[in-house]
Amino acid sequence: MSSSRCAIAYGKESIDFSLSHVDRKTLEIAVHPDQTVVVKAPLGIDDEAIRTRVARRAGWIIRQRDFFWQFDPRTPARNYVGGETHLYLGRHYRLRIGSGKRDTVNLTRGYFEMGVKGDVSSEKIKSLLEGWYRDRAAVKFRESLDRCWPHFEKFSLAKPKLQIKRMRKRWGSLSTNGRLTLNIDLIRAPRECIDYVIVHELSHLRYADHGSEFYRFLDKLMPDWEKRKHKLEVTLA
Image (cartoon, rainbow, N blue to C red):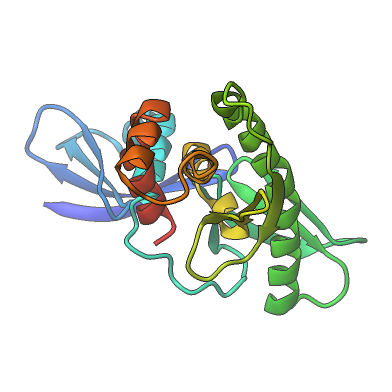
C-alpha cells in the first residue's frame, strides 16, 4: 500500500490530506480527532479524480475539523506569528500578517487578516489582537446580556451594569452592588457558553449561594447548562 501527502484549495483555506491506494471498491474520506484528513482510494483511480471527490466534500471536512478543534485538550502557548490559530466565539482562525499603512485586524473566512504599520513583532501582534478581542467582547457580551435578560425581567430585578476585565480563575462574577463582571477570555468561547456564564451569574440576583434552590432555578432557565459548562471548559482548557 502506497501513501502520499496531497492538498486541495478551498476558498482561502488549504486542506491537506494523506492519500493511500488500497484494495477496496469505494473511496473513503475520514477526519481524525487530531484534525488530520485521511483518504483511502481504490487501486487504479487517478489522483485528479480523487482531488475532485475530496473537493466536493471540502465543506464537510472543514466542519469536522472545526468540531475536533474545539475539544483540543489544551491550547498551546501563543507566539503571535503568521499561521498560528486563535479562537473567537468557539472557532479557530489563523493569523495572516502583512504590512499596511495603518494597523488593522479583520476577520475573513477562517483568518485574522492583520495589517501592521511599521515593524512587525509578536508583541505588537498580541497587542493588536487583544485590542480587537476587547472591542468585540464589548459588543458580543452586551448582546448576550440582552439575550439572557428577559428570563429575569419578570422578577422585577435591576439589570446589572456590565464590566469586562481579565480574571485569573473565574469566568464571571456578580457583585453585591449589581455589577456583572465577565472575563475577557470568554470572547474566545462559543456564544452558548457565554450565555451560560451570564445566566449563571444573573441567577445570583435571586439566590446568592450555590445551594439546591439556585441549581433548581438554573435548571429551569437553562436545562442544558451542564453541557454548556463542559463545552466551555474543554474549549478554553
